[in-house]
Length: 200
Image (cartoon, rainbow, N blue to C red; front, top):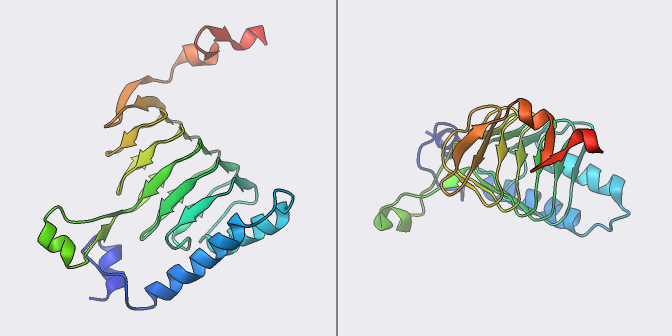
């Protein structure tokens, strides 16, 4: 089996052959150029992101700095916004849906290593796809671990560590991240604690 086949099947792999180092280098050079743009270089920034990522929507915005492993395994949908210091370790696929919001300092990693130290010394790792479905909001400082799917419309609290799938239309918080409650009718009345939409 090739290393790329191992990656796709969730098997242990190394990333130093089969053009993987060159693919990472291309992505990191685009990332460095992206991070070096001026705030007024909006069109240049979008062009670099479109070259860096596997797929983008027409409307999206990512505040620098951005950190990626490859970039070429990342797909983002329409109307995506990410605040500064987004880190995506994309040794395998990361699919981000439409109308998704990321706070600052979000980390998404598709990649992990064996727990046994002898196996880690062999330089082996594994990677599992991460999926962020439509209309998800992820609060600042959250960490999304390999293989996780976050369901449509879910809200992930700031600082959460997401180690397992999160269902749709819930608020989930904590380390490890757990469902706090469903998003319900009251969330159409109150936008923050006791503050009502009707008072605006």
